[in-house]
Every structure is written in structure tokens, then in C-alpha cells.
Image 1 (cartoon, helix red, strand yellow):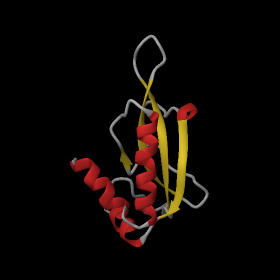
Image 2: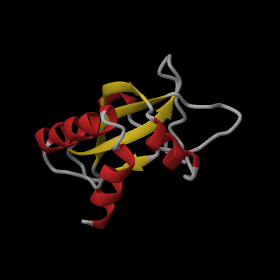
Image 3: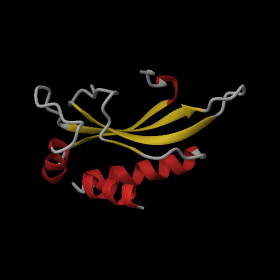
Length: 115
């Protein structure tokens, strides 16, 4: 398994998980009962394209984390499709931060997956 590119990993937020989002997390593959998560870590990540010149696309990832920000990079709760522009990824990440603060992250990511 390829390790993430932490050189181009930009943490946007560490936000407490609300009650509604916690229920959704507990029903997902990202849930670890032995290591309960209390926060969402929302980040913009660079995805290097396979070509001779170094070129990136960007994705937004959401990881369950503890209050210190520790998370398991192998099991994200959500990863967006790759975006060509970092500005688009930052904007989308900001909308997910707002949704998570309102305990509506699970419905925001479901709507994104359907679109």
C-alpha cells in the first residue's frame, strides 16, 4: 500500500464529532471500536500524477481522529474525487468544515457521493 504524501498534506480542521455524525461514523468502515474517535480531521492532500514532470491534483479527505489529531491514514471516512485546482479543494474543504460544525458532515458527504 502506498503511504500518503505528507509533504502535500494540509490540515484544515480538527473538529469535535457531533452526535449525528458519530452515528454515521459508527456504521462506516472507518470506525474502530477499540480506538474511539472524537474529532474529524479534514485535510487537503496532493495526489502526484504519474508523469515525468511533478504535477499534482488535489483531494479532500476526512479522517476520524482523537483529540490530539492522531488518525489512521489507511481508513479515511471520506475522500473526494481529485480536483485540478487546489483552490477548488480548499473551497470544498471549507464547506465540509462548516457542515461538520453543524453536525451535518455525514449528509454533506453523502450528497457529494451522489452528485
